[in-house]
Every structure is written in structure tokens, then in C-alpha cells.
Length: 182
Image (cartoon, rainbow, N blue to C red; front, side, top):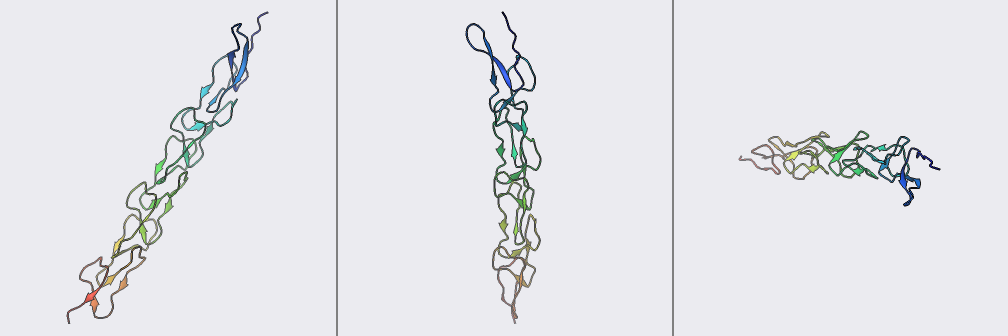
């Protein structure tokens, strides 16, 4: 007697031994089978994963992760300096100017705080404004030079200090003041 066995979704039909007995084998992690029939399991497509056996579908990668290969059992974390705010993606986006991501798996980039800047894309941390400059706004890509007659002696300044009486600066962007001719 020849029986036809149609495996259910989530498993593939495999030959058991030389007599061609057939049995169901659950699809492994990273694969799925969503219909009845003799076909093999299918690798999860790009942007998805499957971490359980015997499944009928793959799961879109959550925000902060991506899948740039087929057949993944888990999604990859976005590296520092990048993010992914959408589900089911194959890559991460770089943080924009003035923003940073200091951890893996970020779904949004952070704004650089006052006194700092992010002059490039893909930054994992903000850079303090150097001496002679300041930044009084968040999420900036550059620092402002201190105006003439003002200075900032410390990196990461939020504002510049007025030079003491009888002292000044000859240029913008100074880190100290000097005596004026008198």
C-alpha cells in the first residue's frame, strides 16, 4: 500500500530510509515553510529572522537591528554611530551631523548636548568644543569661535567669558586674554 503524506506548514518531507518511508522534519531556525507540500524549507528573506523551529513565517527585524543575509536565526545589532528606526530592514542608517549613537542596537541617535558637536556622520560620541570656542545649542555639527574681547579656556564651553578689565583678545576664537597697550 502506497500512502501519500503531505507535510503540514512548518516542516518538510524527508526520506526516512532506503524504503522511502516519509516523515516530517521541522524547519530549522532561520527557515520557514508556509504551505502544504513536499517542498523544502525556505531561508528567511533579507530583513527577517526566525529563532524557532517548525515555523510558517519569518519575523521582521525590530528597530535597532537589521538582516543583510538570508536564513538568519537572529538579527544583527546596528553598530555604534548608526541606527535603524524601522522594522524589517537590511542595513542601518548613519547618525546625522550633530547626533551620535554610543551603543549598538539604537533605534534613534541622540542629540549632542550643548558644549559639544558631531562634525561627521556615524559618530559614536560627541566632541567637546575646543578652547576658544563654544556651543550654546544642542545637535550641532560645529562650534562657534569666541568673539573678540571674549575667551574660553576650557573645552566643552557653553559660552565665552568676557576678558577682565584692561585685557582683551586680538582675534576671535581665543582661549585667553592679554593686556591691552595703554
